Length: 219
Image (cartoon, rainbow, N blue to C red; front, side, top):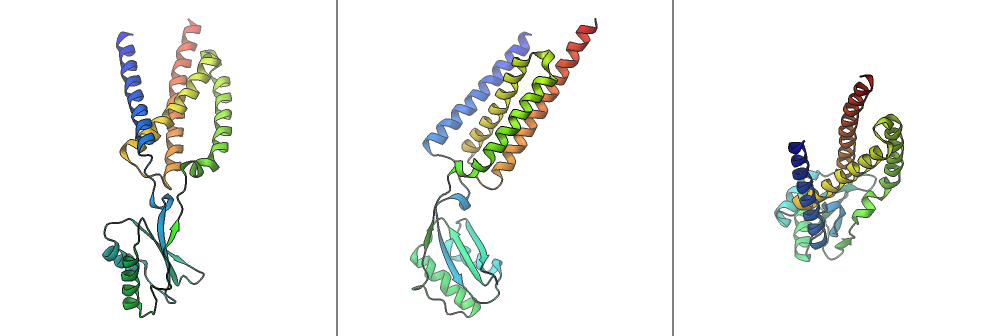
């Protein structure tokens, strides 16, 4: 029992350190958002003919260097392109347009092409659509756990389930803040994976304890 208690204390200490470090990083420098959710600069070029994303990507690599860039075809006929980057100066805009004109024989003008600002998306806005469904799912799961494992103690089962689910998400978000994993399209799926794995671990643990309880009752 002493070794188990010592192991539990070590795990609790590690979890506490991770969460505290995550909170500190979040409060000081914030999360690292994917370019799609950052405040960024955007230009739209009306090429008026078919073009390859790879060609535009090569041009932006030459002009913008190592910046992360999002390139999207727009309009019904996909003959326009949106270029989004963290920063696009007037000089870089002109260079991109000149290279596109050279590549496709277009007559695009830097004077009539504006660099617009894409507003930043807040983290709460990314997860907001999923909050209510997740709350409903959690309530249903808590009810199921209370019924299924009532022999282990309803209150104890509910508290352990809730704390485990919350801690798992807290650890995930703390690690994302610490290692600077971008908040983006994979964030919600990753949250759901951790949520499911937490439930599977809990269920396995409860089933083991329930089996032990039944064996004790049969003696």
